[in-house]
Length: 395
Image (cartoon, rainbow, N blue to C red; front, top):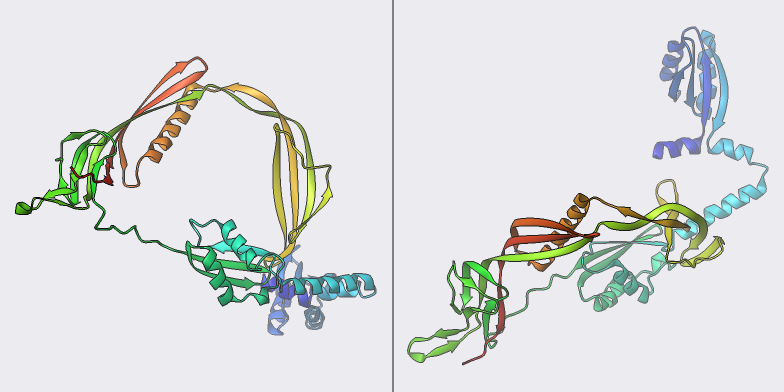
């Protein structure tokens, strides 16, 4: 990229060389320091190459003693462009104004990039920055990092560190989220551990309190698993914070009805395209009759940001909005496709009901057609932690 930019600024010349000994011309260019590139052979004695403006003059000098004919085919680059525009003062003035505007736009923020956030939405971070004056169109040099960080962190409780680095017209927002510790256990809270659902106990880990079940025991929902009431010898009973983990095999049965006849979009009936110019936060409609759509009309928006060579983003974006209306059509799908969709739906529903540490050990599916519907049933066996803490009620 930098080499192309340098060649454009200094200019380049496309030269055709014809000689009985073309390899001698190439050797003479190397020996006399004549820069050249992009050699293309037309035949055995004629070829073209690109060189600089000064290199074209030196090429004629070094090629004359061996009888080579050098012809300039085309000149390109900034010098040739300036020569063609040297009497077009309006274009030169417009180019100067454009260059001035591009230079001035680099001192303002026209785009944001947020990185490092996983749980805090980027919109929340940008709105907090906007309330502190850091928004689209504000001067990038006026951002006070320390003051901005102190005010924004007070609003974003789940963010522990934030930095805004302005490069050109893009503000790179780096975020470090806060990792909150688990809730503290207070000694004065007296609890039991009971079963959250029916299951067959496979492992009991009582951290505090007394285990009331053993591996291999079948338990029902609400049954006491770890008691917070323990014996203290001659002192009688002692109330503690019963806690621990009880792993058990559990069983689930879920079902879902999947339609066999679906209504989908068919052939396109009508469409129209509208364009708008977005400059910073201002939207200027270029053409179009309106943006009101009906329920059977789809809207597809495409944003095309203007960028310069090298990736420099300009504060101008063209929004292309396409509205299309399609004729609805009814289609019937095979029971295999409906069954596959139902199985995926039930598996997602099952995983949403399980905890993070739970695992699915066995699954069985069944399907039965009921008119225009397919009833898909899932029977699954899982291994999960079923113990939950509840307040202890003393006898």
